[in-house]
Image (cartoon, rainbow, N blue to C red; front, side, top):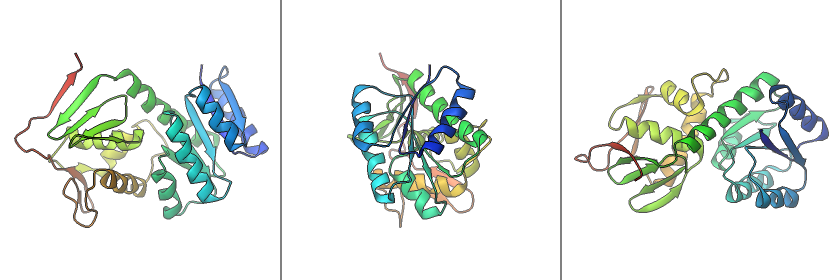
Length: 243
């Protein structure tokens, strides 16, 4: 049974989300709240399968709340918002959200994006214990954490998917459209734009301390895609299961 937590929505939006999800998952459990304190308290008690945050409250407060949510829960997060500017979407994604949907939204789009986020989350859970190692980078599937130069770094599911695909094809340019499909799913009818990918690449560079003015870890191939540069050229990539 799907467990959904909706935060900050108006009565009308909450009802629309409720109707939409009940049509797709009739037995899903949906909790709604407009109170930040109540939402954080609920997350201390249980872990929903998906969180939808309606960013109708002031932007800075909404993004701060998103960060607080992710500090307390490993559940995937979708942010709903009224703005569609690249800057606004970038800030929402950089807060750690898995996706951003502009209001008003269609039922098909909402369900498609929710399905894609849930699919990534469930796939990661089934892959726990499998590790990808490339030089000084170690990625453990299902945790969304990496070990880079002996430092543990937490990534969002989207960031992890992008980096994992780049590392699997290290020292090779991966086309942007291929990365979009790897991160958001090839069956997702609502494919994010290249600007969404660019935002996540920028965020990955920040976390890896890769100079954005002269990147040496994740390199941009102009108008083509991105390439992960192996940190130790004589180290072979290997995928192994934890013993």
